[in-house]
Figure (spheres, rainbow over the protein chains, first blue to last red):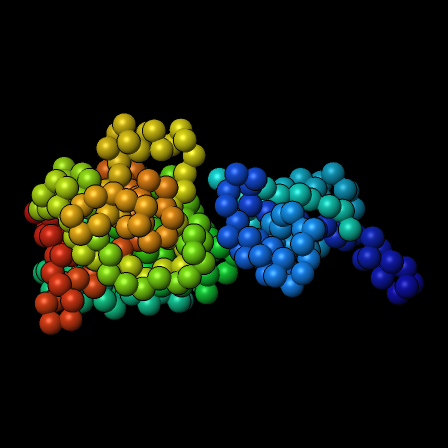
Amino acid sequence: MERQFQLNLKKSKLKFSVTVTLKKDVLDPQGKVVLNTLTNLGMTSLQNIRQGKFFEIDIETKDQLEGEKKVKEVCEKLLVNLIIEDYKINKL
Amino acid sequence: MKSSVIVFPGSNCDRDICVALEKMQFKNQKIWHKETSLPKSDLIVIPGGFSYGDYLRSGAIAGKSLIIREVIKAANAGCLVLGICNGFQILTETGLLKGTLLRNKNLKFINRDVNIKVTNNKTNFSSDYKLEQVLKINIAHNEGNYFTDKNNLEILKKENLIAFKYCDEKGNITEESNPNGAIENIAGIYNLKKNILGMMPHPERMIDKTISNTDGINLFSSLLNH
């Protein structure tokens, strides 16, 4: 009985990840510095590095579509500044 | 004239702006970020600092805080709003001012006195300055690199919404005089109605000859006289 309850609890949660990066035409000075430093370390084949942010989000739902919709809302309400940033949502 | 200074956890220029406002005879009070109502004010100031530790992005959390909803209501009703440094960042996060503030181009926190030019002296914030007057004002920020899209940049220029531009001592707008990489050397902007001003330089630090200069005083006297 308890095991079944725990299984149900587990099922009612979905996990997503969000990656936020600066838009292509926005200068990313931190990425540039990381690239320069790695080049100085001898990794001369690197062409470009962009730095971003990563979030893991648990949502109480069984429905993946509904979960994605919620995560999108989370992104646009707070996590992402749409003027300068893009985001990608992944189901984990 | 009644003023309210919004205080967030991590604000650190709230005391300085209060001293400046009181010196200029504003009836001032501080408002804590958890308040859900604002006293009737003629001017709301969002001070500099690192609200909520700059978590997520500078100004992002403060831009969604409880008190900021009231600030947005008041601003839309025509109340004068001044955002300095982190206050400017917060105002862009609320959408009251267009554009955003990126990391300084050289990746360094910059704290020094810079020259800025008054590019519009026909507003409630700037009427006591002369047009093109060059001021020496302190900046102290890590994210002051103003950025906006082409469309909005056109609007800023067409509607005369650029308040201040970084320049050299003589008032020339040059790349060398741009401390943080801001687009077109922009140091401060207005909203369309010109009742909201966001600026990276700190006028409240320039009100006393014994520690700096008095180039910031006319901003406050303009507000008093409006």
